[in-house]
Length: 88
View 1 (cartoon, rainbow, N blue to C red):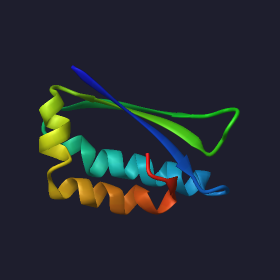
View 2 (spheres, rainbow, N blue to C red; view 1 turned 45 degrees about the vertical axis):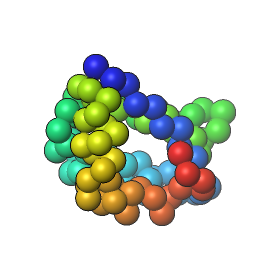
View 3 (cartoon, rainbow, N blue to C red; view 1 turned 60 degrees about the vertical axis):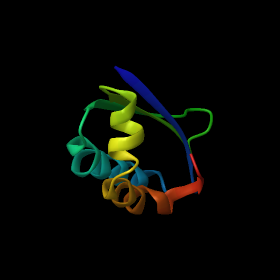
């Protein structure tokens, strides 16, 4: 199993909308990717605009080739990308 970690900073005041978007994107896009095994999202306490996204993949290639190289990656980024204060 491979663990992907994404350190995400969002624009202030967008927490509720981002949390809805990330859940929707994970469940409707990433969950259907080959090799997807699960996820966990943690919100920062000291920095409430910071999130750590953990995604569990069967193999590295499932993430780097199968998902990142597919149209699903663009669909995922269209859902969550507008909230990013900077790229993860």
